[in-house]
Length: 149
Image (cartoon, rainbow, N blue to C red; front, side, top):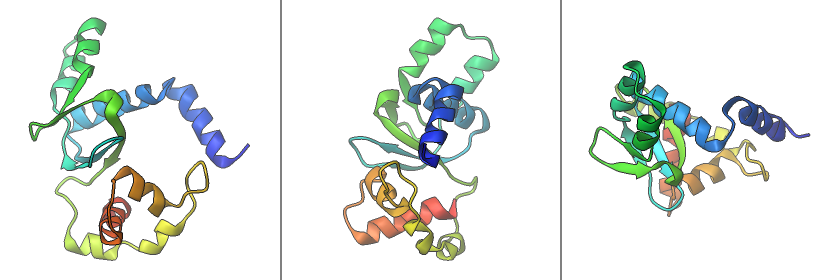
């Protein structure tokens, strides 16, 4: 069993499903108002957004399972945008206060050459796919964000 397969198995044991992991992230990002980049299967990403605080608040104040299921059908963000949970590919945490030019410049792009995907993809290749980069320049910018975060 590869390291990737072991990690995937542990995630499945812990969260039950991909959606379970995404919901956990929605709650965490909502509760702590942690900025993130959100990537999607079929559209460009949302950069440095915050998940609406309503999800964390609903749990804190005892919203029932039916209400939470209704709320999770569409994930709202504080910039006014929203997305269906099943359209979300990844949440990539970003630092509060954003990334400075110095943070971005300090990112070592050679770290993007590390093989990390289930089919031998490099970090760079996965970022290019998930962020829907059209050019090498866009890929470098997205990779810098990911590595600097």
